[in-house]
Image (tube, rainbow, N blue to C red; front, side, top):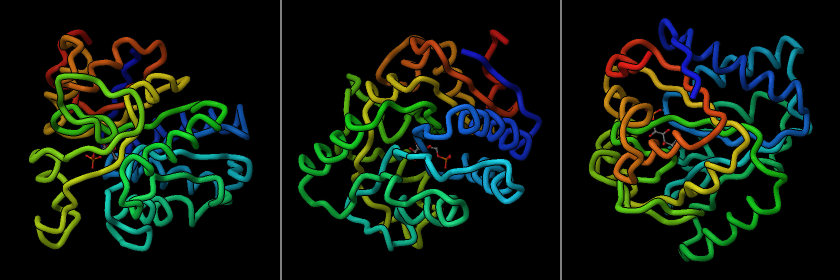
Length: 244
Ligand code: F6R
């Protein structure tokens, strides 16, 4: 695992965006694995700025997002489809037909997950998977558990995740209790994993991921077995890691 120290959120976003931009430049028809949440917003802003400067072309790029709340439509401003349109897709020349987010409106979980797995299997593989990390070590919405789940599945969100995400909703009751998420095997099959993390509230999760035992209780710890992980994090997020 390569660890790149960033001075602050802006520095983290710039450094991580440069890595993602290089993948797009090297392989214009690449498949990006994308994430939502507050961690990647600055990275997306940097990609948009590079596109506006004429440095990046998204016309042949495809994307596969990590997750979506069950029950929210793409028009709902809390859905992850809405987030992606608003924070990236509406501002670059990506063909939205080539962008994929689980269908939050599919009530049949088995069907929603099978449909998303079919999209993942039909792709030529994820070239770079962008990840944030939950305070409890989740990646995507793979919550602490007694096992790792391979492919797309429906999860009950933990109290810690509901608490962390309520800032985006008017009331805590509005936070959906379930989500569809890409599984750990799919994340592990990405050719490269790029994680961004910022802030002291991520320090325990980052320590568990980098130095802790590999355990489904800290789902990100499995990344220790991935051959090509880059973590870009600020000092506060790295404050409990002793091996750097
Ligand atoms: C988002 C996702 C989540 C977030 C994580 C961190 O698509 O899958 O795992 O990356 O919850 O969220 P932020 O960045 O808001 O701290």
